[in-house]
Length: 142
Image (cartoon, rainbow, N blue to C red; front, side, top):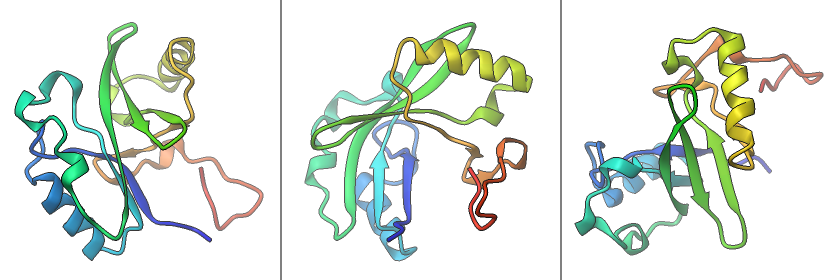
């Protein structure tokens, strides 16, 4: 079974425009099965501590943080907390304005710091064709 989800979502806890509750409701209305709150580490507001846990939804809700990592410039890595494991995602490849080789070099450097599980190939919610690789099953792209 495939699930529809979002793993890079900001709220008013940092630079988003919707509260965590409003975000969950908006994604639920769009048919999402799960989301992860990943507000920016350096913008997190102290008064929002524990706010994600108060959100109730029939979706699966994860909380995490988007870390600012300095490796040959700044990069973003989401750290999402699961019940038993932590997921690390290298975020928004297109936004760094780097060549493919430079991005791949940075991914390798960050992978030495964090056990990267995934790489985000979208930018602001839109697919980035340059990072898609055909798979044997042409219905799916990674």
